Length: 179
Image (cartoon, helix red, strand yellow):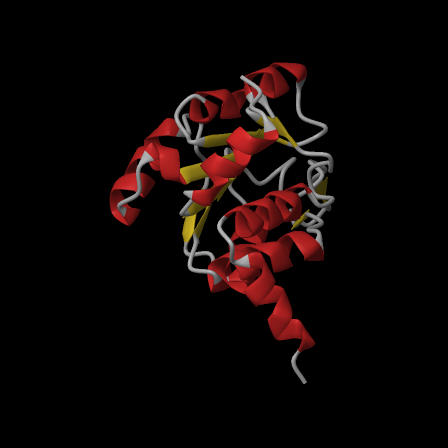
């Protein structure tokens, strides 16, 4: 279901919600467990900054993940993400709740995933995105595959694409040049 650059840009103009898987998208998919039952994940700071820029532009952000992790809760709090759905084996259930709660339609949602559990949402959303190192099956279902790997700039790539498509990029970037 790959789309042309123009088609992607046209879809991205209307995005109001970016929903993300976590492991393999916001992280590289690695999980470190220590002997004290602590979980360690690495997040890429530029992905976080892209999320903050989307929020500043008025877009909503949500996390929908199959695992349950205090680390995800912490990162969500740091980024100001209030819509966090963990332990979701069927991601369609929280997704339905989310779009009803936020009052957005499927075509106004972009979703970034990396594995076959994300395919059901790919078939619902307006913009289905797979990270560069996603499974082959997931890439085949995506409208767009990022150049960057999960946890290494894939989220930022899509944040920038959305901001540029809806004409908000320049104003946001210009703020950094003000002294």
